[in-house]
Length: 89
Image 1 (tube, helix red, strand yellow):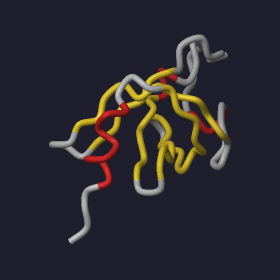
Image 2 (cartoon, helix red, strand yellow):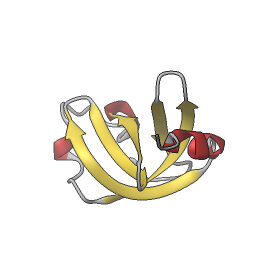
Image 3 (cartoon, helix red, strand yellow):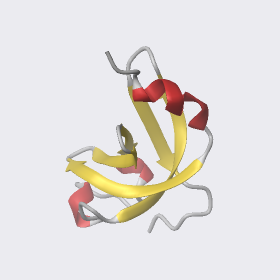
Image 4 (cartoon, rainbow, N blue to C red):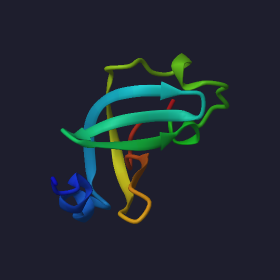
């Protein structure tokens, strides 16, 4: 068995990181933060303006800077927020 990559990533909460958008879904985007770690950024964090889908705002593979809001080991999730001072237009 291999170690859960989130265990090593758990101390990243609060950090600002940049990574490529791995997948776009109707309610947000998944961002690759480390080789085996992907976090979720909700559509509402991508822009201040109303938007129906994130694919009108960003593209897969595009680099995006985010803040790691929470690493939930129990649920095996990484929740992301907008990076402070980032332009979310």
